[in-house]
Image (cartoon, rainbow over all chains, first blue to last red; front, side):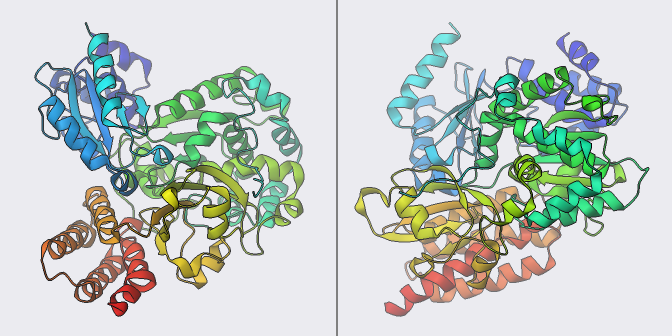
Length: 153
Length: 417
């Protein structure tokens, strides 16, 4: 199991918890941290499972719910908002047939927002997994969704 | 056109950020060599004398913070942390430094560590900044390879280890004590201050925590001296500042200038003026936790004290420009939504209060009879109460944009109606 490999990379210290959780999530094709992994992390670091869940629940990038292969994070900062991120978010909802937090029927995309992606000079912005995109238009969104759909075929 | 004066961004765009050789060829790690030959006392006094103030937003004298961490004890465990959890809306300067010149921050960090006697450090980078994480990680590995990190750095007998830690999506973790909690592997809940990190920080040990831009200034100050640094900028705000300009301007972006440049110069000379030839409406300075400036502030020199005198804050140096056709109530609503979302919930005034502020404005805006005159004084009353009773800077922030928007802009518009 991938989790064992990740755990062996880090000293058994609680301060590595976030690093471990990031790695587990990034290695999961569904962008989440499964229950078995939470159990293993807790054992490994000698902390309670509740503590691991508490940390996962606090940080918005981490999830215990399976998500799509690609997590789309639309920036919802006041700047991106001003530059039109709301209508882009609506466009994405309609295009993917989902509400915020949901995953598209083909299991590819999960739609989320971020409070600020730090790409303000190129607002409106969004991320797809770890890739950042700015100066978004509906046409760009169309081609990005196509690009990512093609990658998984 | 005004010419930039770059210190923190001196190598940005000029060198390959993945090549330590190009950094070294641009005088990189020379300041560290010089620092390691001096007494630590000389280092933090030089920084103190330079008048450098924390570039993360608070503007606290950097040298004073360093001195506090240096003198608290001599043989105890100490840490240095680079705060690279840049989450303030409108701010992206630290990302640019990390993506284009990561070694300058590492060099600053090692100098800071040597000056206070720390042997272990962390760069805490927000999880969304994937490219920054990769670049800093790569730079750390290269620095180890050349003996700028690790045991017996450059034969000086000084040991220092450095690691990257990733945040995971929490604005609050940019607050120094909350960040420390997060590095320890916990939820990002703030601690009560005092004690300050310089007394009791990471794992209860004295910890020096500085912003990326602050640290990127260290090498230049050590090489050129405090006097040189003081010759730039204004009396109480020496040096340069990176301004990140976004919103309704023709050339949004990042620009470094000596402190004292005016808002008018930044908007019209540097960022190419307002888009589509529209009139200026307002500028939000310092991000969501910042203040609204109006036309009457266009010629105030941008520095910590001058801005404070007119009821503004420099904060992180973000300048978010709104043309005269923007609905500022809608902007305010999205700012309040931001605070509501990012409140961690540890203390009740902030948890309940930020939601209450957002709902009050949202409900008022939905009413036909919406009147600024009735809503804003009430919002300000609530925000002041939240600011007085909250644990950390998050709950203390909504009052800043609310009060400045009302007093600098809306009050006049309402009176003219």
